[in-house]
Structures are given as C-alpha cells and as structure tokens.
Image 1 (cartoon, helix red, strand yellow):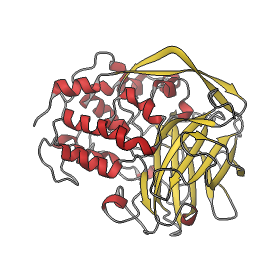
Image 2 (cartoon, rainbow, N blue to C red; image 1 turned 120 degrees about the vertical axis):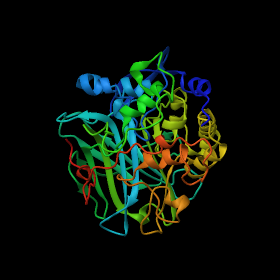
Image 3 (cartoon, rainbow, N blue to C red; image 1 turned 90 degrees about the vertical axis):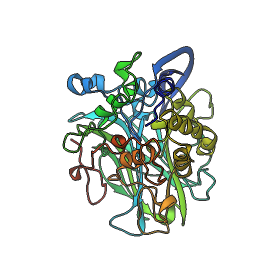
Image 4 (tube, rainbow, N blue to C red; image 1 turned 45 degrees about the vertical axis):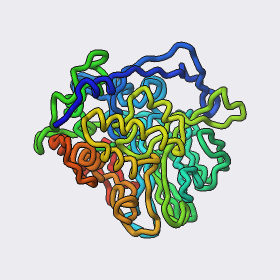
Length: 424
C-alpha cells in the first residue's frame, strides 16, 4: 500500500483565516462587519455532510457551553453563529405519497438532551432547486423565525422563482406562517415542520479522529501523523458519536410538480444581512449539499470560500481538492475522476420522474437518486475513496477504512412525516 505520509501531513495541516467579526443584530436579520482582525484555526473535517468537531474528551467532560462551539465548518460559524451551521441535506421520495418529494435541512447541531435552544431570527434558511441543469436555482423555499421567544413563529416564502439568483437573496412574498415544533400545511398539499429532532446522522467520529488526528480540534497545533491507524473499529465495537445529540430541522413534503418534472439539483444555504447589501437583501454565509465532499476532500482554510460560492463554480474549485486528497493517500486518479463525475457540482441530484431510488442513483442507477436519512453515506463514500466500489480500482486500497461499521438506528426515524425521530 502506497501512502505518502509527508504529502498527506502537509495537505492536512493548514491554517485558515476568516475575515468576519462579531455579528450585530439589525431588525429581523443581523449585520456582519468586516474586520482586519482575522480569526485563526487549524484545518480539520466537518463530519462527512455533518462531521462535528466533537472529541472523545468532549463527550466525556463537556458542558453544554463547550458543545456549542464544536460542530464547525468555519471558526465563525462555530463560535459566532452556530444557527447558520448547516449539517445535512436530504432529498427523497415520499414513503406515503408517490406524488410527493421530501426535503430536509438540518442545522445548529449538538443540541444536548433536554436543551430548549431557540431558533435564531437573524438567519435566512433556503432550499434552492435547479430544474434546468445549469446549476442555477429556478425554485427556492425560504424560512426565517420572527422572534427569540420559546413559542416562535416560522415565516415561509415560496416555493417560487427567486427574485435574485446567486449568493445574494431577496425575500419572496410570505406564503404562510406556522409555529415551531408543530406541523402546518398549505391548501395545495405542502406540509412543513420546523423544530428540534433527533440528529439522524450516524458515524464513528471518535475512531475517525484516531485515523486522521489532524481533524481533531483539541490536538492542534501539533496533531499526530495521519494514517497511523488504518481501520475503523469492528462491528460490535464501533460507536455512533452523534447518538447523544439533537439538531434543528426544516422538513418539507410537497408535490413533486412544484419542484420540476425531471432531473433536479438541490442545495441549501444560510444567509444574513450585511452592510455590503444596503437594499436589505441577504448575503450567503454557508452552502451545503453532497455529504463527504468539502468535508472530506477540502482543506479547512478553503471552506469559507466554498461556502460563499455557487454550484456553478464547483468544477473549477472542489475538483482540485479532490485530486489533491486522492494523490495524498496514494490512490490512482481514477478514484478522483469517479468522485468528480458524480459529486460535482455540489448538489443533491434527484430524478422526479422516477418512483424511488438510492444514494447517487440519479448518476449511477437511473433512479430517483437523492439521499434518505438512513442512507449510509459514510460507507458509500469510504468504499469508493479507500476501496474499489464503483471504480473497480484495487491499487492502493485501504480495506480497514471502507466502512465505519455504524448503521442507522431505527429508533431515530419515523415512518411518516416529519420522518426524523423525536428529540432526546
């Protein structure tokens, strides 16, 4: 097995700077001021679509205060605005109505059992849907919260064509309102739930930090060399690191025809008010879609730049990081080619004309595709990158890294809307 330890250590060990300082609240949204005081942090993984920088020591000793800053995509999101920290996107066929599709956005992670964390009224949450194949949104759904009280009200806008496309957003006319943690619906068959749910993502993150210690926030700035451990824990010993936590969710079930008629690409964003936009439009602060893309392949200092871009820029951006990572672990570039072919642009692809599907099924299986909460995206990604799944390439395989031996816990899911399990 060929592993260039020096190359991967250099690739993983990097410094990130983020030029956004303390947020200032301004009416329904807040302003983010630019500062010359740059925040530094060492690069690590956000868990694959929802990696959390929560450590074994944190799991044992952490208080709720400590937990609030550990699920990090960028230092700013981790320390200043956790409510804008996106963790997972799910797009799947409705299991109860073949005419419907389901969209789920998870964010604001690491909510401990019993914690009543209010939603942040300063953030605009959006589903963005491309139904013409150009990686530009044609349909959007917008959500924001109108107060910080425990009995918060959700404002929904859309689904409809956006007023502005790209990283700036203008608010659409209000479609309806509903109460947090309660299901509400429209007359044309759309159901909504915005509230706290059990975090559906599953992964042995503790063992992963032993495999690539650089990703462990507490070990900076001098982590141990990577890949000294070359296997996940075996079945029966592997542990789901995220099992103790809840997350905030926006869940929508709607007629497929409101999204398009054939293949679509879906991504999610969070946006805030900023002095750069004096017309009260909102500026994108994070973007997320395919799990294990930026989080696995991209060095941490580049996460913010990617968050501030659109899917149209992914071919020239993410691809270089995918190729660099594959080279660093000593695997052939055919692995990178396979990942790029199905994961770039960074959108969850689905085919609304197909009745059901599987993860990456739009690209590889001529089915609905999308992503369901029970899909084992860690094993799918690991089996391609470290094994021979999809590509058949055996050179440089690392068999012990092709599965983390953690699967979905049925108790964390519901068979009907809102599909994610009740919070702890």
